[in-house]
Amino acid sequence: MSGALESTGTGGIIALYVRGMPFSVSAGIGFIALFGVAVLNGVVLVSYIRQKRQAGLSVVEAATSAAKERFRPVMATATVACLGFFPMAFSLSEGGEVEKPLATVVIGGLISCTALTLLVLPSLYMRIVGDKASRRREAGKAG
Image (cartoon, rainbow, N blue to C red; front, side, top):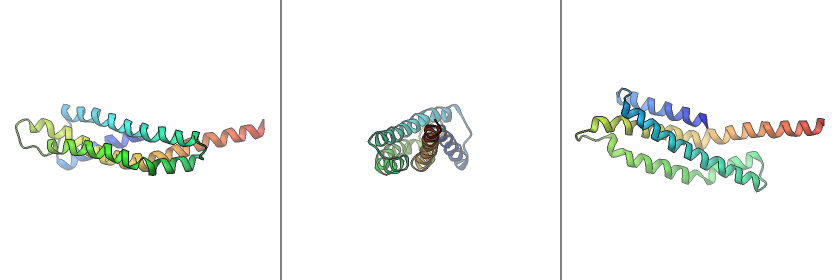
């Protein structure tokens, strides 16, 4: 899941850059909140892939069906967080200068993280677990 965390950071940094905001303590706190949501979405998807594997599906079938079936929960988690931070991102009230970087990081990071969680994470899972399974089969044939 380190790929998801890296994409989260990238999305947050790009969002700060696009809005012309410097990195601040508030933005750093936004990254901490963002990493929690990113990890949660990754855990939801990977645990469901594992359930599918235990039910007898192949690695490819499990990862593909899990991404399709967990699309709505992952999107709901990200959408609710984005909508919750949206008023902070565009606040014009006193203290808005503290709220804006935090919300900007969370929203930008969630956009990139959600897309990569649903597209890249299943592919990485197929690659890593598929490679391990093929090595085990080769070891079984040799032994």
